[in-house]
Length: 108
Image (cartoon, rainbow, N blue to C red; front, side):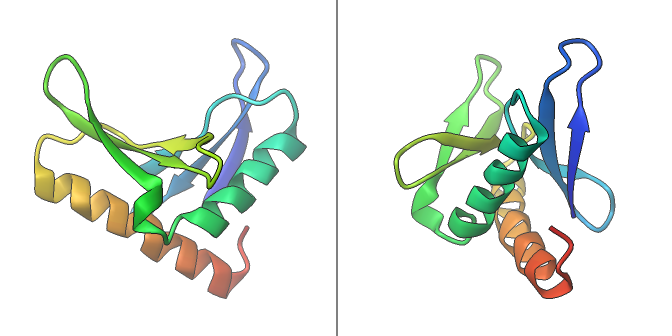
């Protein structure tokens, strides 16, 4: 399920995609308006089932994460950090499964 919220510190809007268990599996960057954040969600729905849109990265501590980009290369969302390759792959699959469920339930 997608959720749009306003960050109290910087007064910016963000979205997050949560799995059925409530775990955040994808987070968006900050936006000035709620409408811009909603557009980012639309982009997740358009691009989230395309494996070529995911880019796996690693932080300085060796933890992996993925980013989702649009067809123009714009960053749409970022995952949490994963300790294992299998966890990372499950995270990507979870994004795809959850956006499919979102479309079916019209929760977005």
